[in-house]
Length: 102
Image (cartoon, rainbow, N blue to C red):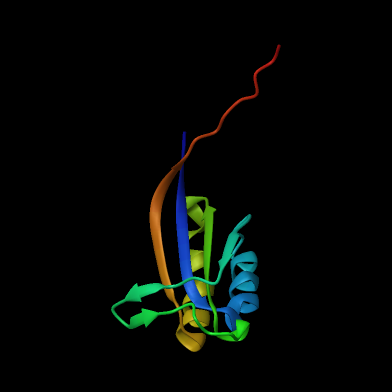
């Protein structure tokens, strides 16, 4: 197993391009995007009953090496401060599997 950092971002769909560009610029090797996210937070309820895709929320999850944390923070903080969104960074463990030969 290997230690990694997990970043989770919930934001408006319109900001997806800026968020993904920021992650790439910070050296995050990959990401997963889940569209049409609904839920409730301290900021209120986010519903999924809007017909307009541009108002939908997205959930981005990515993993990166712990030594990239400062770069990720430096790049992502201004983006999220300017355009909004919620971001969580936590510790995770990556389970690397090996292929069975035979």
